[in-house]
Amino acid sequence: MSTRFDDVDPAERRTILAKVRLSTTEAHEIDRRIKAAGGGTRSRYLREVALRDHSSDVLAKMIGQISLSLNQLDDAPERRLEHIARQLDQLIFLMRGRDD
Image (tube, rainbow, N blue to C red; front, side, top):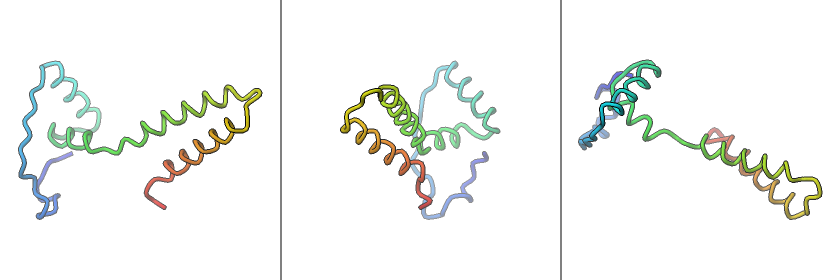
């Protein structure tokens, strides 16, 4: 996790400075997470975490919703089953990601 300008497209150089104040506890926790992730700088770590695709959070929530729906299937009305089918379609779409 080294921060170098040469790994950035010259047209995309980082010219905007964003200052962030941290408590000692926050700084220690961020440093601990950086070390656990393999090292690097706070700047790079914070950029990567802030810009990360959080679709796994969406998937986890959707899986939870589907699980709840499936647990209530005993005498489910047809519209409920259609709703579950739509949720599964959305889940499959999200899981495929941008590779398709």
